[in-house]
Length: 617
Picture (tube, rainbow, N blue to C red):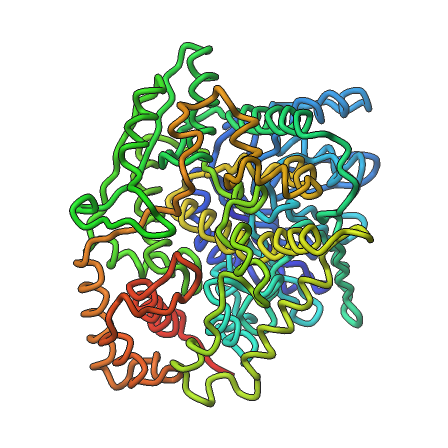
């Protein structure tokens, strides 16, 4: 994985004068790519790369250049391709010759051979840019699911792009201005974002499964975007047994493909179904090669002392992690975080995301990844199985499922109670949320004749894909890459998503279990106690010291009359938040963010406004 950035302009003088700017953009991405740096500056284009070397350490350097059929192609790329051998074989048959074995070289040749239609052949996670010197046009693309990020901004005849917002903010033509729509996304939807919204004025994110062409022209520069992939409903051809067999094949193949690396690979393990499946498959593959897999789990100091069962988290993770440790042949490491470190890392988590995020849900992952990086450069994690297989409570609880609106964000009125009346300008909060919800439903692919329940389940999948899952993928990418750790997510294999989209809900909910189809399909892979364990969310601290730490920090902010937080937030509302009993809390963002995380989110908001010198316009 890497960081990419660049600028395309019709005026070569802008590129010639921009070297210092490009160096700053590159430096801002150094955490994503700590191993190598490269830059292409020529004519109308500057392409910037910061590399985390994972495959073909010597021959995978970027920007990578290919001369073919009278055109020079220049590529910068962030990601991994999991079908590199098949693509290479096909390209060799077309007359291509390769200098190394990197997926970067295969991607570049694929684009030279097939143009933008190469996207239909790629299986992987990626964001990349290709500049064609002779044609003088830039191509941008992002993977189908949206695992790897790509932001851009057009300023006159120029297009600037980057893996992270911080890279764009290094450019003097992109100041940290946030208008009413951007602040509405932060305040009303955060830590989520409207698809394509880059929050900062004039900044957009290329949406998952989308690509773009940019042709610089002094008078009428052209930027054209299109969606090349989306979930599409179809008649499901298989009975339950064949469906389970197909799911097993897809999951095993996705995990196995993502173990390829020239650097150490590890897995996350929480004792839940998804990470345990990945670890078990990886362990088997490592053992067959005479190697030992390394696994990692995260916990919190004194959690055992303070844990209490809830509807969402009925039991602690530790006993199941120990069971998996006994089951595997792996070398396991327990990483324990304390409350002080967790609170202090809230600010680094903003630096990593460039926005207020998921509070300690972010900062804990950041600290976890930092420790893993000491041992491994690549790790596999279980994100996205819940979205695809229907594991969340809002899939299975009929009352929640049929309730109008985003199921994880029913807190608009509660949120609005914190903000000054002028904070959102003329934007009506309820209408702002409703418009985005309705648009997502309208864009959902549903075959004519589907009954209400099947229609609603497809809407739920699409809502999760475009919103909740993107928030989690943002978190995973930014928190891991902040320490130069590449985290792969096998359940994001687009083949799994495509196949499961049209599978009947009765199959997915087999035997009344969340993700029942996945559990049945993977019989024999895990100890039964783990295979059929009730879903438990990402582990959080139960230690009251954390609530004490973030509450004290927020009171310190409130004692500063110049705190930028008060441009947006009412002081008395924060007082009520700090004084309210925790058990009366309204969730800020699903079950992941309740009172401690809401307090921490306001700390992140204040830090973001101050650190990034946000100008509200």
